[in-house]
Length: 312
Image (cartoon, rainbow, N blue to C red; front, side, top):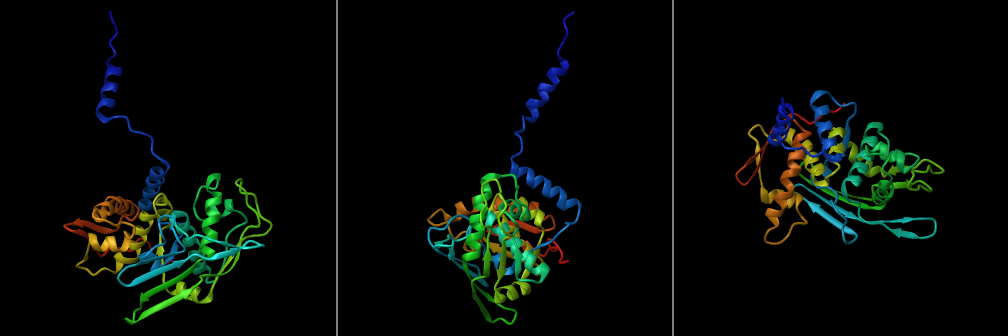
């Protein structure tokens, strides 16, 4: 009697129905793990970002030039690239950009607010600093990139403009970092330097940061590190949703373009922007489960939501 392959056929049939799912990418795996953790348990830690940088972020890609500006209704950020002395010459830096700069700046602001001190330790090596900001410290390819972004952050000049609680405009024109001691040497293997790296914030910037710190979940921010736009949308929701009125507020696609899409120009700018913006919103909502945001005709409806995280 010939043996049938009923079990094998059934397995094959199931595979045909459900398809063969490709393995998750590192970014997707980080997102899944973060969503699971965020929805099941409170964080062990809380991070902070300046409220202006929750509304108008750093550039998402490298800027061709040494000046950058981004604005929204009540806030404006201008960033000018600076120079760093290498022991012999002043070296022109670029404007900090992308997810790594955002993680580094978030770490600096968080430590300053938590310790109530403008002096920020940045570790003994790039390897250690990468661990401090939530990056894989075994990824040798990113050591130099992390160092470059931290140097760019430490040399740049910020001009922050915003409308205060009194309704009057305020301007903070400052080089955030007063003193910058980076690792004397640090190769692709994360070789330790001769002394710990340290950053000291200027007093005016430090005081403004203490007043305007916005809490967020570091698990969410690290999980979004595949996309600077997703990080920016998440911080914007952290800053804004708990302040929205009970009836909610509609923000049009054009308004979103003006806030987040400065690099999109031309006749198809709005469509091209939406193609990138909506996936970023989805990412942000995945790691902010209490956020109440709906797609409506012409834009998004923001509704009053519980804070993404409460201050300690």
